[in-house]
Length: 238
Image (cartoon, rainbow, N blue to C red):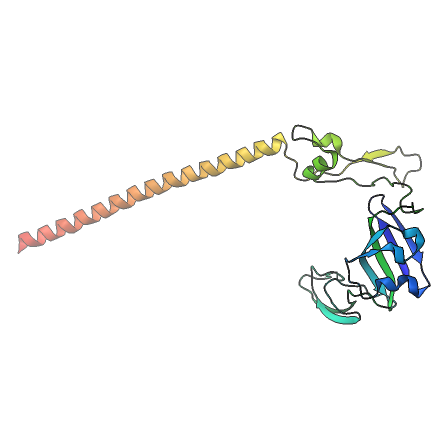
């Protein structure tokens, strides 16, 4: 069985091939997102705690969360389900997926380090890889850099250096993401303008309604006068 171990704290990932069944038997009958101590796997993982995040069986079918069986099943999947990508809008398809309980037919098991142990693991805990992409949303940038509302978020965007692949001697340039949900003075001005338009539209509708009500009242009064005049003329003739 292959163990694909990831360390979110450093951004590193490593695959370990274990042939001895006694070492990886500790994962049997465990479900996805359960935590497993690393002492049973090997001495180098002493003190480590791993969380099962996924896996594939020997034929390559992925494990699906919520399918509480240790074998393969065929499920009708639609958009929003894991292990399925919608090709056309509204499409559903019956696909084979592996249950979320680990068994001897699992070929690759994905693990995430939840708690670090005593010893350093080369390729997992020894170096910290820099984050290639930083946060994009304004509130997440503030949280990432511990900023206050007065700080300008645009100064803290994580930029990356890019070099053109088409031109050989091209100068490298910086690339930054477009900040989402950024409240700028222009956006506030636009919001005030839209609110003013809405209020102006409401006032105009109120004026139109008042004019219409006055016109209808005048027409009803004229109609009543006409009816009264006709009745009066009939009485005189009689």
